[in-house]
Length: 538
Image (cartoon, helix red, strand yellow):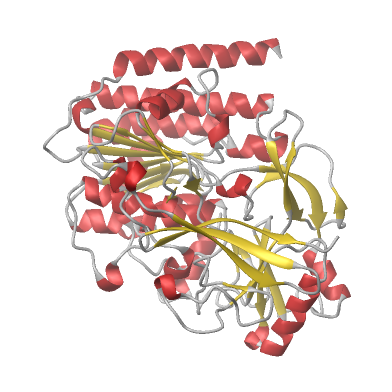
């Protein structure tokens, strides 16, 4: 323990020195931002930020704009949020609806892992080369001659979703695991240079891979390609938290290393003379909570006679851990209704969603699903006629504590026996506040200083705000994004305390004595999903 504390303290001192010596606040510039960096720290809960472990991020939060009510896009998983960040669109519009996805053109009777970029390429090939249904930030910027680069130490699928047209020549994309030792970047000339300079990447998603990717960004991408917009995805502390839990010594050490890398990258930007027009976002893709109960959904459905076998195509299961998508063959409404009634009777199922009972868009969307006792997929931005589920349900959560005393526990899916879980394994994917709450910080020449904002914001709002920083306006019609511009964060924007946000509790009867509740908050046309839960008969 003393060695861990020493390492964390050393990282804190170095990070603080780097930031204090290398980053100077500039006066507001008339020109647009010349460098925008989006740091995505995978799995970073906002309550994990502090001066000891994360001195760089802590300083950016104190000096910049801190969104107290920040939201992950639901399902609260990595690839869904990567797609939302890169497109400014929700899953229902961009077509990336889950970490584990079912599309019959890829596999007819099972879901596939969107973390593997080869599986995503299969999805694109079977969908008329439409991996995502909306244009990405990289496409929009490249069309205007603006340099864009995405670097990721996460999975290959996560990386591809940050710039999914990179294999077709759009911008730059770096990930050390595309084809280890052969392909670590797009385009080819960047790949050749990367392999020559930095060699093969470390084998696992880890702090070592964060270091390798960060070095490539600082020593090659930034100084030699000079992109205007960069997304830097740092895979830790996600992996450490999955294994050891939030605020464990292992997670703190991994987080300190990611913070150190952010400090080094900001110092490089200052060294390159970009400090006077630098804008920075620090985000996380989702929150985290302790897993205390495992549910074998396939076994339960088979036992109830609702699915014929583990590999049958009558009901295909796509799991996000804390939430589950069910695809029913031929969208059979009678079978969907049977499954919903079954779920409402289970103590391990929480809130259930089906498609809307009546048509509507925007604020007029029907909050209730067509099947009794359900909310609508449209309400949570998850309805997609081509790839979306027939049923989505969340698993229960509580505000209980993990071993270090961090709030948030959650049921999760398992391939083993249904029952209580022990240990520190943790995750995300559900609709508890502990999974929904993420980190959103904005810092730089064009943002307010030392401002805590209570108005909600989401990862889907980042792309339209970047376009605003670059002076790109006039996006309308089918090309419009779902996210809103975070104007209250800008120096010349409206007073954050005067932005209207309306919170509402939606209710649905979920069987005798049970009621489902879902809380949303609306700002203009933007509807944020806060949390959902089921009140059960005692």
